[in-house]
Length: 160
Image (tube, rainbow, N blue to C red; front, top):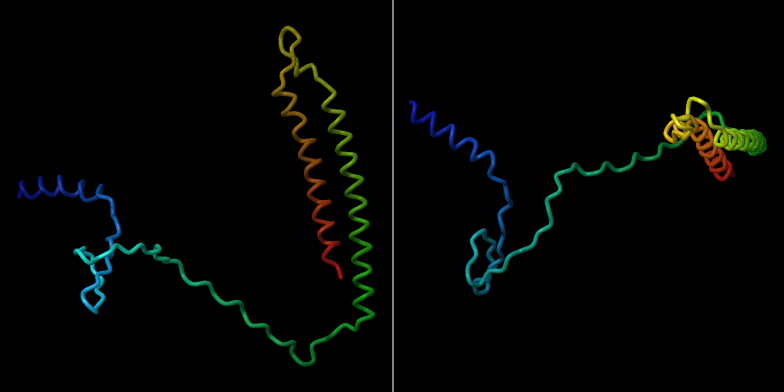
């Protein structure tokens, strides 16, 4: 029993550390027959195969369902009016966001020009890390307004 345990304790770690490799496949011509094998012979050549895809196949897109009869429809004039209202609202939001972005840029420029007493080190030198940390929130506001402007412009571009 002890010898068996010793063999297992040696063999098991060795098996775990052995890397797993795919076996090579060879295409062999034997007269007028073609043979595929994992053992090469004189008339064999090694095949280079693409890796096997084990991912599930993509699902086809769902079929479009027709509008059920009796479903309320909006006439063209009403839809155009709604589209116009949406465009006006988005353009108003865009103007407000651009104004907010300009104010955020002014605030950032103002804060970059200020050095607080707590940001000074002994001897009068400025601690750049503390300054960067303080003005980061102002940079974040500018970036947020820029992203909002881009999103609103994209929405306006998608309108009919």
